[in-house]
Amino acid sequence: VQLVESGGGLVQAGGSLSLSCAASGVTFSINAMGWYRQAPGKQRELVAVITSGGGSTRYGDSVKGRFTISGDSAKNTIYLQMNSLKPEDTAVYYCYVEGLHYERGFLDYWGQGTQVTVSS
Image (cartoon, rainbow, N blue to C red):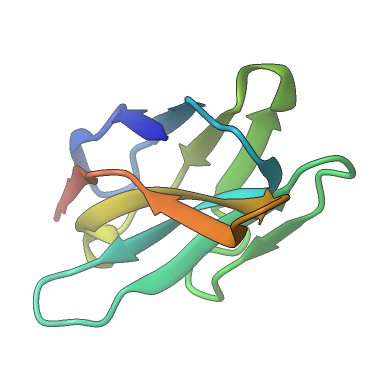
Protein backbone atom coordinates (compact mmCIF):
# COMPACT_ATOMS: atom_id res chain seq x y z
CA VAL A 1 0.00 0.00 0.00
CA GLN A 2 1.30 3.42 -0.92
CA LEU A 3 -0.03 6.71 0.38
CA VAL A 4 0.90 9.80 -1.60
CA GLU A 5 0.37 13.09 0.20
CA SER A 6 0.48 16.46 -1.44
CA GLY A 7 -0.37 20.07 -0.78
CA GLY A 8 1.76 21.06 2.18
CA GLY A 9 3.72 24.27 2.27
CA LEU A 10 4.16 27.66 3.85
CA VAL A 11 1.27 30.03 4.49
CA GLN A 12 0.66 33.09 6.59
CA ALA A 13 -1.56 32.98 9.63
CA GLY A 14 -5.20 33.30 8.63
CA GLY A 15 -4.57 31.70 5.28
CA SER A 16 -5.67 28.40 3.80
CA LEU A 17 -4.08 25.25 2.49
CA SER A 18 -5.47 22.02 1.19
CA LEU A 19 -3.92 18.60 1.45
CA SER A 20 -4.70 15.46 -0.46
CA CYS A 21 -3.80 11.83 0.10
CA ALA A 22 -4.24 9.04 -2.42
CA ALA A 23 -3.96 5.40 -1.41
CA SER A 24 -2.94 2.82 -3.98
CA GLY A 25 -2.36 -0.91 -3.85
CA VAL A 26 -5.11 -1.37 -1.28
CA THR A 27 -6.17 -5.02 -1.05
CA PHE A 28 -8.43 -4.79 1.95
CA SER A 29 -11.71 -3.21 2.90
CA ILE A 30 -11.05 0.36 3.97
CA ASN A 31 -12.73 1.41 7.20
CA ALA A 32 -11.40 4.92 7.40
CA MET A 33 -8.77 7.36 6.20
CA GLY A 34 -7.55 10.43 7.95
CA TRP A 35 -4.87 12.81 9.06
CA TYR A 36 -2.72 13.11 12.13
CA ARG A 37 -0.07 15.72 12.73
CA GLN A 38 3.06 16.02 14.79
CA ALA A 39 4.81 19.21 15.76
CA PRO A 40 8.40 19.26 17.01
CA GLY A 41 8.59 18.05 20.59
CA LYS A 42 4.92 17.11 20.70
CA GLN A 43 2.96 13.91 20.41
CA ARG A 44 1.17 12.97 17.25
CA GLU A 45 -2.43 14.17 17.43
CA LEU A 46 -5.61 13.52 15.53
CA VAL A 47 -6.56 16.08 12.92
CA ALA A 48 -9.49 14.49 11.11
CA VAL A 49 -10.88 11.12 10.12
CA ILE A 50 -13.48 10.11 7.57
CA THR A 51 -15.08 6.69 7.40
CA SER A 52 -15.78 4.92 4.16
CA GLY A 53 -19.31 4.14 3.16
CA GLY A 54 -21.29 6.58 5.25
CA GLY A 55 -18.52 9.14 5.28
CA SER A 56 -18.90 10.20 8.88
CA THR A 57 -16.20 12.53 10.13
CA ARG A 58 -14.40 13.28 13.35
CA TYR A 59 -12.07 16.15 14.15
CA GLY A 60 -9.49 17.01 16.73
CA ASP A 61 -10.68 19.72 19.09
CA SER A 62 -8.02 22.15 17.97
CA VAL A 63 -9.17 22.14 14.34
CA LYS A 64 -12.94 21.92 14.66
CA GLY A 65 -14.69 24.60 12.67
CA ARG A 66 -11.55 25.41 10.67
CA PHE A 67 -10.64 22.19 8.88
CA THR A 68 -12.82 20.03 6.67
CA ILE A 69 -12.07 16.48 5.58
CA SER A 70 -13.68 14.94 2.54
CA GLY A 71 -13.14 11.86 0.46
CA ASP A 72 -13.58 10.15 -2.86
CA SER A 73 -14.01 6.47 -2.11
CA ALA A 74 -13.80 5.50 -5.77
CA LYS A 75 -10.29 6.94 -5.87
CA ASN A 76 -9.27 6.01 -2.31
CA THR A 77 -8.40 9.65 -1.88
CA ILE A 78 -9.06 12.09 0.91
CA TYR A 79 -8.73 15.82 1.12
CA LEU A 80 -8.18 18.21 3.98
CA GLN A 81 -9.20 21.82 3.58
CA MET A 82 -7.50 23.95 6.22
CA ASN A 83 -8.80 27.46 6.78
CA SER A 84 -7.97 30.16 9.30
CA LEU A 85 -4.59 28.60 9.85
CA LYS A 86 -2.67 29.44 12.99
CA PRO A 87 1.04 29.18 13.77
CA GLU A 88 0.20 26.33 16.14
CA ASP A 89 -1.04 24.33 13.15
CA THR A 90 2.58 24.06 12.04
CA ALA A 91 3.44 20.38 11.94
CA VAL A 92 4.12 17.42 9.73
CA TYR A 93 0.77 16.06 8.59
CA TYR A 94 0.50 12.32 8.12
CA CYS A 95 -2.16 10.55 6.13
CA TYR A 96 -3.26 7.07 7.11
CA VAL A 97 -5.61 4.36 5.95
CA GLU A 98 -7.05 1.55 8.04
CA GLY A 99 -9.18 -1.43 7.24
CA LEU A 100 -9.81 -5.13 7.50
CA HIS A 101 -8.11 -7.78 5.40
CA TYR A 102 -10.00 -11.06 5.17
CA GLU A 103 -6.89 -13.04 6.19
CA ARG A 104 -4.54 -10.62 7.89
CA GLY A 105 -7.09 -8.83 10.00
CA PHE A 106 -6.79 -5.18 10.92
CA LEU A 107 -4.25 -3.21 8.90
CA ASP A 108 -3.13 0.38 8.88
CA TYR A 109 -0.67 2.23 6.69
CA TRP A 110 0.87 5.67 6.97
CA GLY A 111 2.19 8.17 4.51
CA GLN A 112 5.59 9.82 4.77
CA GLY A 113 4.13 13.12 5.89
CA THR A 114 3.90 16.58 4.44
CA GLN A 115 5.12 19.73 6.15
CA VAL A 116 2.69 22.54 6.88
CA THR A 117 4.22 25.75 8.18
CA VAL A 118 2.13 28.71 9.27
CA SER A 119 3.98 31.95 9.80
CA SER A 120 2.77 34.62 12.20
